[in-house]
Image 1 (cartoon, rainbow, N blue to C red):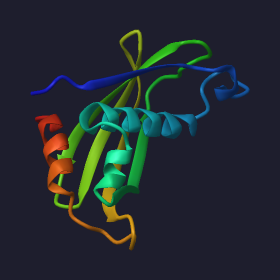
Image 2 (cartoon, rainbow, N blue to C red):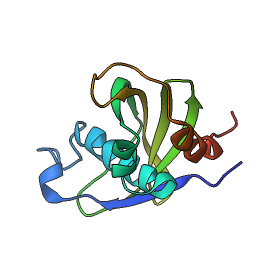
Image 3 (cartoon, rainbow, N blue to C red):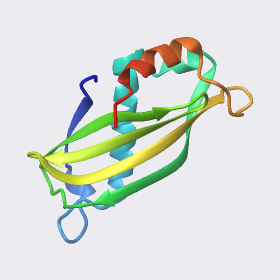
Image 4 (cartoon, rainbow, N blue to C red):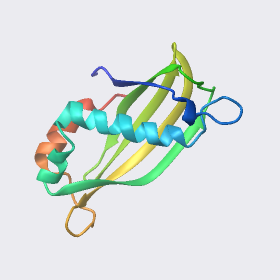
Length: 137
C-alpha cells in the first residue's frame, strides 16, 4: 500500500460562516485544490493531462461532515485513490485537524477527450501514473 498524499491548508477568515466555522461549500473547493496537487505529485503539472488530450470532469460528489473547522486552523486533506476504471476514478478526501476527523468527501472524475468532451479511456501514461496510488480496502 502506498502512503496517502496529504495537502495542508489554513482556514482563512472569509471561509467561515456567521457561526465562526467553515462554510460547507469550501470543502469542495479544497477537494479540488488537493486533487490538483495530488495530480501534480503523481503526473506532474495538470498540463500533462492536456498534453495527452484529456481532461477530468466531476461526475459525482458527496461529503459527510463530522466536526467543524474554524478560522486559522491548519487542515490536512488526505487524498486516496479508491478506484480506477477504464474511464473514471474515485478519490476519497479526508479532512483532519490535529488528527480529528472533520469531513470525508468522495469525488468521481470521468476522463474526457479535450476536443469532443466525450468520455474516453485514460491514456496509458496517465493510467500508469495513477495506478500505483490505488489503496486497498
